[in-house]
Image (cartoon, rainbow, N blue to C red; front, side):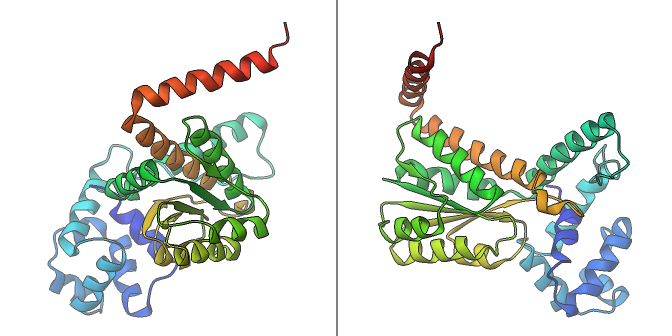
Length: 284
């Protein structure tokens, strides 16, 4: 149970003013905080116990004791303080670029592991396993993740769509039923086209899943199942590199979980599809 400090850093982006002083105090004094009571922290951070409890709840924690346990685990980690996002600079040579991009992908995956809820992943796996049809919705880089998901699930005989056209996304969403699942992929959780498609899917009765950044956002509050990722891209954020890697990893987790539900059948379909593709496009 780690990721306490990470949750606070991410939460700072949308935190309420009444909770900001608490969050900033914890980030500046993590070793001290794990020895404090909630009353002592409230006094030192010039906040109220209620604000601390509210902050913990908003970060998806049971309360202040769980936050302290997670912070303590962060501080005990061998890599604590050693890993951080490496900004890509115009002056970087190719070896530095290679090292930085690789390190950032690893960092994003490790941080995602700290905030991704296994129970939510299990819910997503079961929902998709039972689904008659799965629609994946995404725009830009997230649409590429949606296409990857469609390709994977088609290979194990799961009917899946990942339309790139926004009109087709809406058209497909309204034809879903309560036997289907809709997956919205948006790191920010605020992509208008994805929100529209998921809203339509909910109205049609489908189970909805959102893959977004950690914390509250429009998509996370809209869906039935929220899967969280972490990515700390800064100046080159528009490239959506590390966030895409984290999203792909979550899709892989769900795919493997679904395949494992009917392992022999999934393996059989994977072999058949691979054999068919190789036979069709063999060049000898």
